[in-house]
Length: 348
Image (cartoon, rainbow, N blue to C red; front, side, top):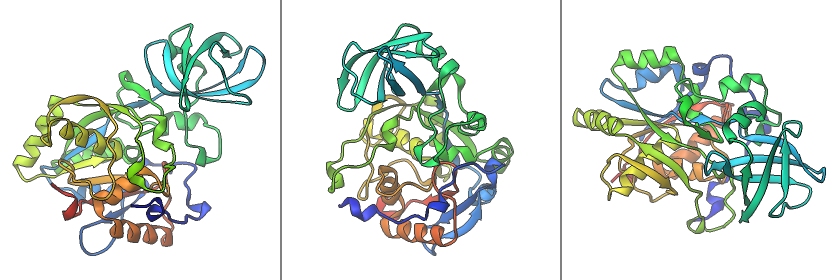
C-alpha cells in the first residue's frame, strides 16, 4: 500500500486557524456504511447515538510544551517537549541555528531556568532541567498549537485547545485529542439524557503524531510510541453496553488507539491495561472494540488518515473528503468533525 494512496489536495482557505465561538457549533459529516455522507451538526450527536451506547473520551491534558530560549553562547533555540521521562528530564525536539551537542546548556525565562542537553537519539534530544519541568512549562511555556495554524498561540487557545473534561492531573500531552474539542457541557448533558454513558481512557499524545510518513510503502513506517491507560471502570462500561446491544463510540483517534491497544495486549479481548503503544492502523487492520468513531479531518498522507481509512474503508473516506472539500467544511484541529460507522470488513 502506497503513501500516494492517501494524498488529497486541500484549498488553503479550508484550514481552520481559529475555533468557532461555540464548541458544538461545528458541522458533522456522518459517514454510514451505506448511502453516502450526510451533512449534520455536532449538536445532532445525541440523535445519531442510541440509549445504551458508550462514548469513550480521552481525558489527557495538553502541556504548555513549547519553550523559547537561548544557548549560553547566545543562539536562539525553540524546544518542544516530546515526552516526560521524569520530573526533571524529557525527550524534546530542538530547533536551533546549529545542532546542539551533549553538554550544551539552554536558558529559558529571561535566563532564570537552565537545562542541559544529555544525548541525542534520532531526531530527539534528552534534556535535563535544574528544576521540575511542569512548573517551568506552566510559567514560561506556550501551548504547542499545530504549525498549520500559521500563527502563535494566544490566550484563547489556553481554553479552547483543551477538552472540557480533561483531568488536570494528567498533563502530559503535547497535542490535543482534537475530536473532543467539539464536546461541551450542554452536549454532554444531552448525551447523558439520551442514555449514552460517558467513559474515559487516557492517551498522552506525543509530538510524533504530526511526524510525516517518509516511506513510499506505508507498511514500512515505524510508529511513535505513546503511553495509554484503559481502566477497569471503562472496561465495565463497555461490557455493559455490548451486553445490551449498545455500540462503543470512540471520540478521536487517540481513544480508538487506546482501546484497540488494550485489546491487542490481551490477544483481542478487551481488558484493563496501561502501557506503551505503537499500534499502527492502516487498511486491513481488524478492529476489536470500536464500533463508531468521531474524528476530525486529517492531513494528507498522515497515519491518522490511514487509521480512518482502515475503519470506514478507503473509498468511503475518499468520497467523504471530496464531499467535505466541495461543501467547504473546515479542516484539521479547530475544524469540523466526522462520525464514521465501522466498515463490515474492518471488524473482527
